[in-house]
Length: 283
View 1 (cartoon, rainbow, N blue to C red):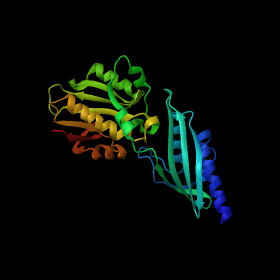
View 2: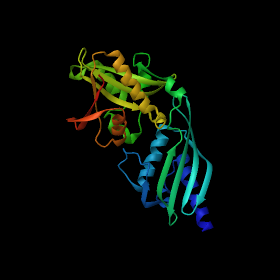
View 3: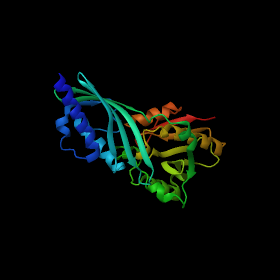
View 4: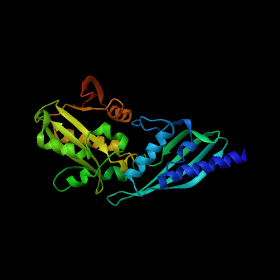
């Protein structure tokens, strides 16, 4: 049993090192074909070891200088628990440090299950106070173009890369006869997210939120819900006539559906371009 426990710890160390090297050749030998990730991102449509490969590729693409270290490791029976420190530097220069607690269950020398807890998922009061909204203008539009989501999330947000490009085009063309106003979310002085408000001036119910997302480097830190609540308050303050706000959600984007439902959006039963419409009554 002692040998098995030690082997499981060695395998866990190899898995962590894959995030640092990006070398995927050993992944299939480390994970069981029946591997289940209980924290599986809802936008991934692959399973088993292929899911892990996609997560590594996405992490290294959004954070090319990512470094993951094991701060503590405990093994007992068929399980290994590790405390991981994730360090990187965002392309705009901001240092990122995160911590997770992960548990792996083994069978026959391979990982069969994973559970994880994100220690950084709760937003501090300082972070919340520093979160602001700014209109995208000639001064910051290039920074907006650098914002991106994980590759497997792209289809949920827009068909175009960079995402902000299609939003800026809509602001000029004004499809549907609406005004399209792009906004950026800032944590302090760093742009971390993006969205668009499309509306019909002086209307009561023709207000739409499109292309709402948090940059891949800042996801998992509690910004999504707080940014959404901040934007909803902003709309209510800036548009006194607004009685309801609409948006659409990709039918496979379960995480976004939960986010919107959690702040009061309800499905209307209508569909727009293949996506269900959600509505929030604000007055």
